[in-house]
Length: 171
Image (cartoon, rainbow, N blue to C red; front, side, top):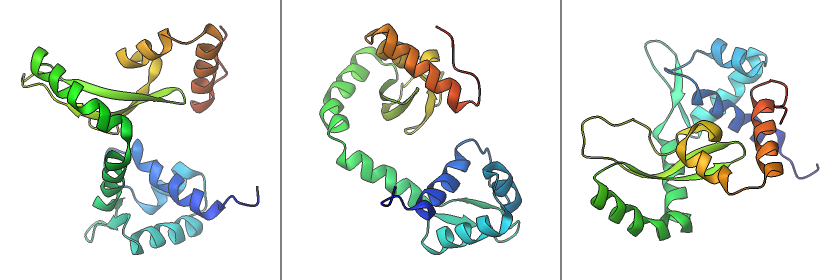
């Protein structure tokens, strides 16, 4: 594909390595997670630090996403018409039931929370905007899958198996 910019894809792939990280990562950890050599990863990390999407802790030299990544989420929130249209309904539902209300979308085989109004109750599952989970094991994901044909559901579940490096699910 002549329009595909591999280095840009490489940068986003590197940023996505932090999705599963519970703490900042070392350069070696990033390289291992990506299956790339350290030199190549170092150049990409350096570039992302220079343009503000990553930051390096001075004491440990470990790397983490910067708040500039959060700005990208804000841009999504500001530009997404579904979130904008759903907001009054989310507020009303939250007020009526006094429970956490989420707006989610199906992306490939996962749901992603695109908007959230938390419960006032002290016991609540902590999932932030942008949280991703397999569609088949979440209430919103199951609701979305329920209105699709068996063929579509099988394709979605097969794709999830591919993402996990597993054989596709037999259906």
